[in-house]
Length: 157
Image 1 (tube, one colour):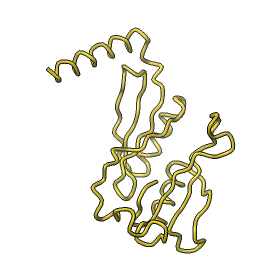
Image 2: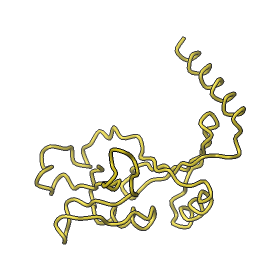
Image 3: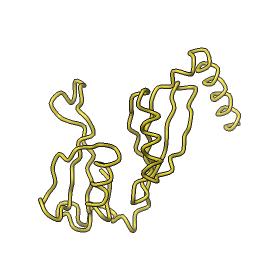
Image 4: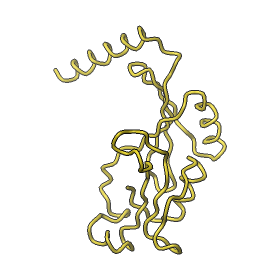
């Protein structure tokens, strides 16, 4: 669940840029909470429940009023939200985000055989699209993981 200053702007952004579908919003006009369908889940826990991203206006939503810090006063402990994409769609997503003027920053995580792009939504929430990186072999991943472990151990000493 994300706090939202402009819930309709954020809802439109996630629908347009990430392709999330509107699942429900309450009330129907001038919503104070919006549920967007991220995808269908095929896990044992969520066989009949879609994966949802909830956007809430904590100043206007009756059940949240006074229970959450409003977006303008939050300490913002959230680092980022990550969404997995198919590797074959990586370049298309990257180009689309650039076309939208979102200036994605790319990163590689060789130890995890993954690559990602980071960008922000209109309210400054950091988002990540991540996928497998078939350009990294299992041997390279193992070597990168060892180097990362050594770096972490050195920083702790």
